[in-house]
Amino acid sequence: MGDVVNLNRARKARAKAEAGAKAAANRAKHGRTAAERENEARAEARRRALLDGAKRDDAPSGDEEKR
Image 1 (tube, one colour):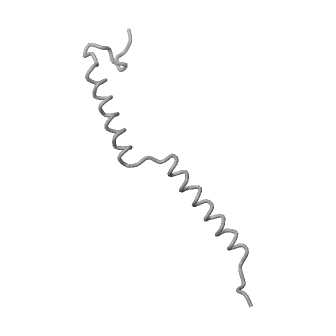
Image 2 (image 1 turned 120 degrees about the vertical axis):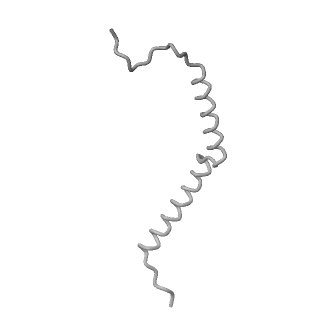
Image 3 (image 1 turned 30 degrees about the vertical axis):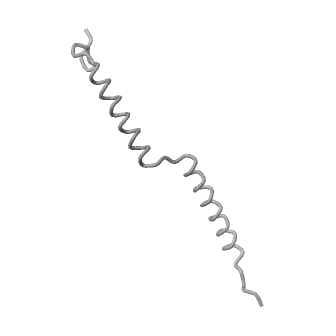
């Protein structure tokens, strides 16, 4: 005779495998490598430094009371 198979477990195992395959596909499609994230962070830091360097010292800040 064959082995007894719990159909509920088989159904859940199949669904889990399908979800895992879908997650792997999404990671490949939308994910970024660590190098890409680091490169983007460096570019953002450069951009902020450039903008901070272009600020005027006599520009009014938003913290002062308006008369």
